[in-house]
Image 1: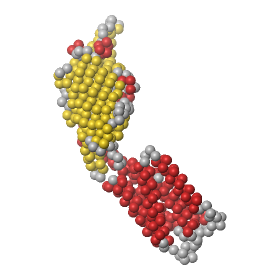
Image 2: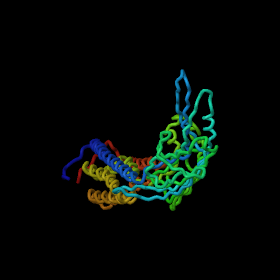
Image 3: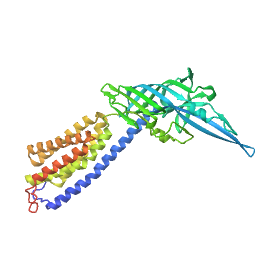
Image 4: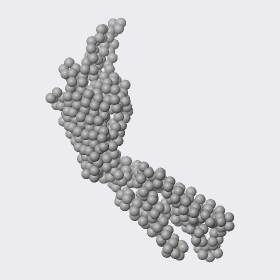
Length: 439
């Protein structure tokens, strides 16, 4: 710094600070884009693992389909029309245990699971018998009924020996039904079947991140257990009672009735679509509580606020202590604050967010303390600046963790910081204030 250099007037200094702040927005925008890019790479890693472990799964059991062909004679010609009638089960019971494992794809971590599920259910065929009742002048021909098991990704099936119906183990085959992918069992014709069918089977199914179920019954009951300690219960329906969640795992029960859904027990053809059915899915996501990218996003959203507050503190330091700071020093400080978020992103991919944040925030606080102790030639001032930075980034960490109260804590903290600056500068005569020359 030259001995005789004078800064521009106060208004000019403020303008330079504003320009420096706006310039840092571009840097922060690039860091946010980088977070998005890394998040996309993680999604690609998830897709890579899903090719072998199975994707997020939705399972639906209890849909019975009857293809019925009606033939009439008009003007000596036979006119035929085939309609598919769909009927859901009366009741379905699902009991399951889910083991979990963490797989790595490069630096990315993907939770996978293996679900061992036991299904039992009852289907009433009386509604279908009414549909095939003889009509005057109409010939009907009913194809064999099928019991459909919806599976988002059949490649994740590890064990499914068949479905036991009426004491017989029937084989399964790939099938599409109601716009959904899965497997099916041919039950036979209506004439061969009783009015009520009981079925049961065991299924071992692997997948990634999420396991959901479709309520294909007038009454669906699901009981699920897993050693995963941080479940996220999601979908259209939550557990019917407070689930048990401990560091050793969770246990939860769901009960879904026909009246809880927005589609009926029976319909024909495509009166109920796949999207409507999938909207009724419920279950659990194997949530990772330390989602580095989500928390990096939350951190970057507060970045400009913290940079602006830091510049306000620097400006206050100048005008209360007589120290003079060069615009380059403002720029260097802003660059350090912006690079903090880049360092945080890089470290959090390897160390976890908490450890990465502690290292990045600690390094930045020490850097600012050393930098300003040299600028002001005062170790005490450097310690104060470093301490203020540590407190600010401690507050930012609390805001990131507090998803529900972030707005409340953030607004109160901003108000407190602004109030402190206003009180500290209330006696300054800004009209007569001059910036001291650089010494």
